[in-house]
Image (cartoon, rainbow, N blue to C red):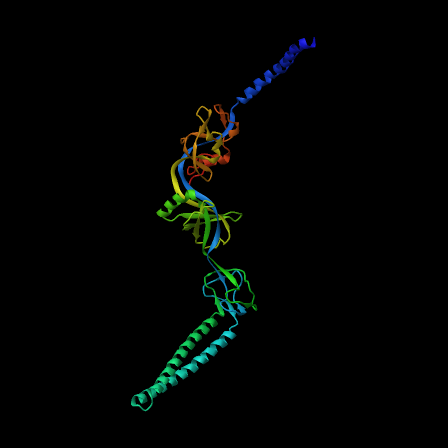
Length: 390
């Protein structure tokens, strides 16, 4: 009996579950058909700079590690750490007494050989006529000539030794080889330094200063074309509370692409007259390579990516939302260039895309006061989030 009535019982239970759910379903369907609330912007045409943004590190345009040319005791330090110096300014002094004594010794040898040479020449000048007259032998005269020439050679050697000793003595005074800013003093006064080994201080030239950075090899062709047309402006931006920007020019392009990273190295030079850029500083760099004239642009937040590619939601005049596949171009600040798929003047959704159902009506939310103020400015883009190109 239980088995015969089981199918009927099961049908009754299903009907009891389905029938109460019909009325709420109608309400949910009605609710889902209410227009989605969105914020829109109008696609515009404007000039857009094509730029490369990358990161780089600042470095001194010239950097010299000052080392002594001879060994000895460091007797004087004539600067303060972190001081700016000019080329030729006194930096260090090494005890000159041993080198002064060596110079005095070779000078004495020079004077002695000068006397020997003069006497030998006088002897030869006296014996040469006597040899012609046969009073003395020719061999005796030649002996005096040889003695005079030997003394002259010794004198020349002593002169070279004196010059070398004078040079060595001059190395006891160490001056700045370039103009720049001094770093940390590595050796204090009173220490003994070793020739060509002991690093005393580093001088970095900050005016001008350079930035070293890399770009992708995909941008190399456009970069070379732009360099052929003239200088490329590069802008360095330092972030932080006291952030600032400095403008310079590209001064160096390497002769090979790094196969390991697919990048090529460049350098930019900055006047840095206010000395705001510092060696070792991490900066963001921007290079403007071209300007896209009258490109169709939309706020970047309007561009969406789905399973079928990149698209935007276009709001038609009747308020219906449409999915529009587009081909995006380069991005600049808060805007993105649309190469194809969208015309200037069309309205796109920039906020509320998650609530939009393709083919359904949408309700456009009024812009807030800040957005309205931006729209009212005639010199700027008339859509929220669009920034006028430089």
